[in-house]
Amino acid sequence: MDDIKIARGVYFLANNRVFEQVIAFLRSFRTHNPTIPLCLIPFDSDFDRIAALKDTYSFSIFDDPALLASCDAISEKFHGRVIGAYRKLVAWEGKFETFAYIDVDTVVLDSVDFAFDHLKYGPYMASHSNIEAIRRWVWKDNVHATHLLTPPQIAYAANTGFFVSVRGLFPMKHALAKVNAALELKDCMELHCMEQPFLNYLVVTSGYSYASLLTLRLMGIAPTAKLEWWGGQEGATVDNGKLYPPGGEPIFLVHWAGIWQEASASGKSLPYQALWDFYRRPEIPADIFTTNP
Image (cartoon, rainbow, N blue to C red; front, side):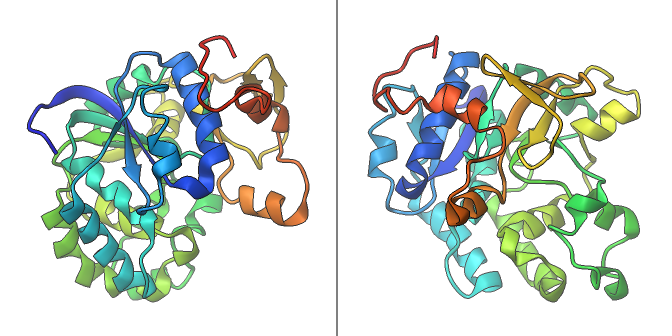
């Protein structure tokens, strides 16, 4: 990586296997965030089709083989093989002084600038946390019996498909130093969700303050904070590239975590397929970008 630092930016993680999701993500992101710097973290070495889009959608590529290899080594400790999702850990070593990370099973419906303002409440901010339905995708029930984490640390259990943070908060040497302690909880981790348990472990044992947009909103600290929406949650309506939940709260992204594989296997449409189609629009070639999709 070069030594030039940039005040703020956004990272995403991808390879060729998720090319279609990447197109919808990039089109939606650049429609609503035309100028903020964007950087691809390669999921693995198979990302040439994604890299070919960097001029069209104006993004750079994270290029530090040693740091990426360190992430791969951490994933092998937990899974016995390389899992590219752990590579999002390099975000804390990148060129953005403050940054957002966004998974590509997502369409972005608004500017993400607002999220950076919430770093004044803590240097790590997820979108949703402290929801029991999410906890089970981070920690298994047996985690309580270990007494290695406190009940509040377990309850935080944030989704790691979106977060904002500060460069240097979790440098790679810190992540590596935490691996052995985290492995004591390996049998309590929902490793189907790849890096999510380990990243939650880093956050809640860091000694830094942490929160989520949802908890700040519910506590009245940030009552106008925008939120994400999970594609498996019913009740919202879609119109002209936007999603409107029944409660009327502002939604800045929609993600389909855990749903893509199910829809692909069953041959069924995604929930809110019309929203994804609005940005993907298969009739438009991947290398042609318009700010008015």
